Structures are given as structure tokens and as C-alpha cells.
Length: 586
Image 1 (tube, rainbow, N blue to C red):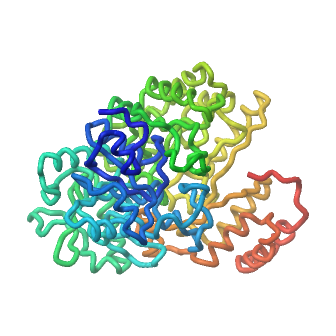
Image 2 (image 1 turned 60 degrees about the vertical axis):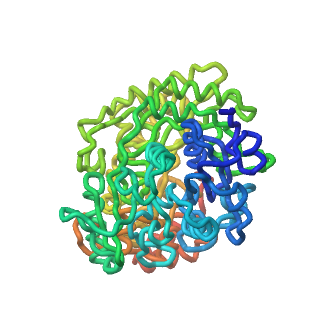
Image 3 (image 1 turned 90 degrees about the vertical axis):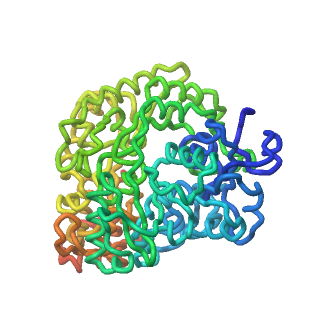
């Protein structure tokens, strides 16, 4: 097979490769960037490496047939993904306002993908290519694979598989599963026969007598049954096949695919990525690429189990780490790029310092390996990660190696030497860390450690900075509006920030993303663990919480006064509205 510099996006490119017919065509809501940080590129490259002819249609105009017809009819199937983000998260803010930019589009242009892109693309393909299987993948499909609360329509929607009328849904990091599907279909097996593959969701007409049944879809719009369904799903989906009646059929949620081992992960990241956007973009700036082009993915997965985070449901709970050799080899490839000037901007994953902390107890029922306390089965010495960073630090042509994907403070505190090395070598002026809030009550609802953990880390980090003469700063991630957060907790958080002169340019408003535990709490008004009634801030109150946390902005002054009066904290008016000291913004 010829060397494929880029997956073909036009018929002419197919013919240059000698491909008169494609086996698989991937339709994606993102621009096509041939880099391992982008799902469509990884899946496409992986399938090509296994002998399949794959093309890609990036950001098709869904209002016309033209783009969908560009590569013809695939021999096996269409793969559909909304892109690296859920299309609704991509389009709308936490206040349901339309975003003005799309980081995954050329020049950051918004509007190049539709709302609910997975459904829209699938329906267009079904109309144009009768009888051709359509298979869903990517994070939008993963997080909408079962009935879920949809914040943007404020209702419970059905599985995206059934809503879109696709033939199969692959959830998670899909390499192993998509290859099995492609190989089966290439031997003449019908898509309708693929009902039992790990890592898939499908629909069936009947269920076995021993089936574990979730509450019927038609009933889970009630908060009580929605809470019950989510409790059952989160407790059992990793261990049992689950079924759910929807009309005259059943949704079948198969067990997850087993995690990739280090060797297979190394093979994937060794694929011949161009590490650049496709030439069709003619060097137009694509913000998402600019953010990650000098970074390296060291591992997948997250065992943190934060209730508001969706990564666990897509990348999985189990850490899958690449070898140091594989990562060093990728750094060597990075050095060859014309945009690399000696700084590796990041080596990490969802939480950077989980690298090498692998646990293969696939039957463990814990939803978090580190909450309420760190599991004894984990090797929390950080030896693997420290060795990795040291190896890359000594690669010729590498001047700096930074950790910018964020770390878990509760894990970092298990090894003081790791914190010291972060300060000495791997902090590029600022290091991201996520206390999320100050209130321990709110942190418990988030499934995160107490605020004292963050404070302990800040103290150690600051001491090392002083010892080595650095002026590094920590950039705290803060979230407002999470279920259970009242005005009182918001004011207490703001007081802490102001007392420490921390002016946060970016504060995250809680957004109920599909499938997360926090979203379940938001919709049901119930504590996920206890079932007790829970206060849920919404709409304007979330805006007020954000305003008090960003008290220093002139436009927030009137909101600060309003929230202090509502919280009966008028004594703090002069504290927040007095003249400000010099800026220390983050």
C-alpha cells in the first residue's frame, strides 16, 4: 500500500493513492488535522495501517448533498463523529448563549457544524446512501449512548443511536472495536449480526430471561426513575450487559472493550501522522491545533471519578500508558516540525501525573481510585512519570519540557520530590491545578478531596519556588454553579480569592454535560449517593456566583452588591468594593 501522507479528502487524492473505492469514510465535525490528538485522524490512520482504505469528510455542509457525495459510496461503512467535543458544548455557553468561535474550525470560525452533529450527519447519510451502514463514535456518541439529560433542550433525550437511526454505536477510545467491526464486515458479515461486541451499543428485539433491565426509556423522564436508572448504570455498566426497553425494541449496552496494553498504544502513536492540518486549509490558523501542536499524549484514562467530568465515560477509568521509548520517539518527530522551537508544551493526559499508575483490577467496583482516599493498589511514587520527564528533558534539541495539562494535587502530595521537580524544570511560569471550590460540602458532591489538600499543595509549591528563586504561579481552576452550591458557598469562595489576591480571568460555570453524575443531580435535584434533596442553582444565580468570584471586574460591581444583599453579607461590601491592589490575574 502506498504511503498515505494525509487521509484523502477528495476523489482526486483517492485516485493518486490508487484507491478507486474506499472501504470506510469518516465524517467529522472538526477540521481534519492529521495529529494523534484528534480522534478522526487516529481512527483513520489505525484502519489504514490494518489494510483498509479510508477517506475523511471534514465539516461537510449538512444543508446540501454535495460534500457527502464527495468521496462516493464506501464499501463497508460510514463512521460519524461530531468531533473532539460534543457539538452542543462546542456551540453554547453555560448560559445557553451561542459561542462566537469554534477552536476546531479554520480561523476559529463558528457555524461549520450543526447542532447535534451526530444525528444530523447520520440522517443525511441515510437519506443519500440507502443501505450503507452508519456507525457512530467520538465523545458525543459516547456520552449520549444511553438516555441522558440534555441541558440545551432541558429534557431527557433517548440514546443517540436510536435518535439518529444509526446501525451501531462504538463508545470509548474505539481502535480495538472499530477494527473488529471492519474486519467482520469485510468478510461479509451483516451489520445486523454485530450485537455482542464489547464497547458497542446496539438495539435488539428481545432480551434473555436473565437480562439486567434499566427502567424503560418512556418512564425515565421522571426525576425519580432517571436517578434510579443512573444509579444502576454507573454501578453495573462495567460488569454487566445492560438492556433498556424503548418502544418495541431494546437498547443493548455491551460491556466495555478491554484497555489497550502499552505495546498496542505505542503502535498507534507511532503511525505516520503528518502532525499538521490538511493542506486544503492553506495554513489557515486552527486554534485547537495551535494549542496542542507541541504537546505529547503520554496516557489515556482517568481514575479520579469527578462527578462533573465526562472523560471517565469516554477514555475509561483505567490508565493506559505509553512506553518512555515511544514518547521519546514522538518527541524526535516533533523536533522535525518547522513549528517546533525547543519547547515541549505538555506531556500528559487527562491528569498528567497519573502516567504509569496502572491498575488492572477490572472488577473493582470503586468509581474513583483516589476518593475518598487513595487506593493502596496504586503505585503513587510518580517514578514512571519522573523518569519520563527526565528522559525527554535530555533529548537533543529540547530546551524545555512543561506540564500544562493539569495535575492531581492529592496524588502529587504522595511524593514531595515530584513537586520539587515540577518547580525546578516543568513549570512554564504557571501550573494548572483544580481545587474547583473552597467548600468541602460542594467538593464532596463533586467527588473531590477537601480544600485542605489544595492548600497543602500550594504551600509546598510556594516553598520550593522560594527555595529555587522562581516566581512560578499556580492557576487554580474554579467552578461555580455546581449542584449543591448556594450563595453562601460562592461568597466564601470569593472571600478566599480576594484575601489571597487571586483574580481569575477564567471561571467555569457548571454545564450539565450528558451522562455525568453531576448532570443527574442537576436534573433530579437529588444527591447521587444519598438520594437526599439537593439545592440546584440555575440561570441568573449561576451568573451571580460567577460575578462575585470575579468581583474585580467593573461590570460585576452591581452584581456583587446584589449577591451580598441576598446572602445577607452586607458587611463585606467595603471589603469587595474598596480600591484594588495591583493586579495578580490568572
